[in-house]
Image (cartoon, rainbow, N blue to C red; front, side):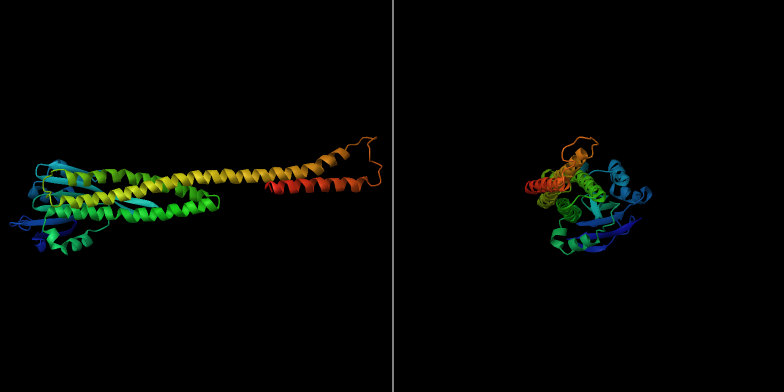
Length: 321
């Protein structure tokens, strides 16, 4: 079995390592065991199912690894599913952590998340007064550990959004940048879908009378819920910025296209003057005025220059050129 860590605790302090055998999982009065697993198989998990009489439906959910965040009560057992998230470039990688909480055990099972709970275990063991509360405080620690990992995702996404926003104000967005913008928007919308259920999980653990949850530990889950709400609030702000980037980029592009159109129209008008005059005098009629005038050629060139200069000055003043 992929056992990351398995230890017995009493009065908030580590007592011994717990091997996954009937003898190793025997617990004395006031003791509880915290077992951390990583992607166990059905056969490997069977010994824990029998030892702690885990409910079959909860076991099925824990091993399937396709669960949204939720809290389920099975008799005196509590089953909590949470979603982990990690930013990899512009992609958010998701995993799951399932926790079984009983009076004398906390079993955490990770799927698809490479972020170990080793640092969390060290942190909790450094506060034996709090860890003495039992498995429910371990549950709080795991959920808080998961939610804390959401913040770097928002920070990274915020930097990317602001970068694209600045780029949209300076120049046309390239095809790559537009694709990145849509990818980022899709990733943030997908991320938002797990924040709501995670907030509900924290709310239930805080307010409902659930087995294995001490009333003194409930306020800690409120803190987890607050963290999720703050992340969700920042995420809402980012999605609004993304929408504004779309609008600004569209407006600026229309404006730039309008500027280009006006410039083309101005130069077309300037070219139309000599074209029109040359076209008139290019007609092969026998009796046309000014054909035999000595200064006609210079006069026509001067007329073209004056009209074009007048048009050029007018277009400059109106900022068409």
